[in-house]
Image 1: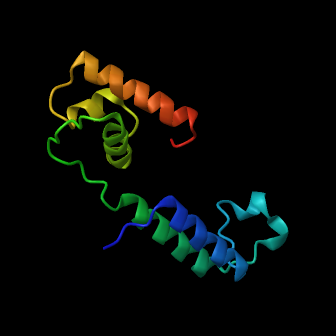
Image 2: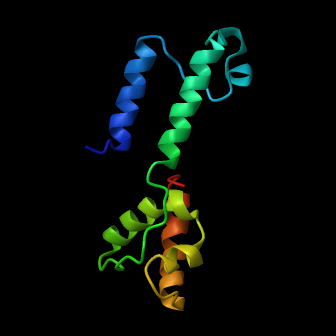
Amino acid sequence: MARRGWRGLNHERAEEEKRGLVRWLRPEFQAPEEATVPQAEQKQIELEAEAASTKGAAKPEKLKWPGSLSDQVAAIQRLLPATGPDPSELAACFGKRTKARIRTITEILDTLTALGKI
């Protein structure tokens, strides 16, 4: 199965909005005048979102720590849904929880947070 990147999802969402389907997170606050999505449809949207967020959220066995920084960032991003932003928990996914690895993961998490990726 091909993975859709955030750009693909962004384009998909834009197409939906052109067709008139706006997926409000909290319609009663964001667009109370347009809160016309039927409850059954809204529930289905919520179920789809929940299923997507739990997909692949199982904790993997010990992984090999990537050598390059870009591969490290990608590995951390893949693990975030399963572990959350805990540097020690993320380090455990790669075997030993060394101080250097936890420090590197903390820096990666800080950078991702500053970029708005977390």
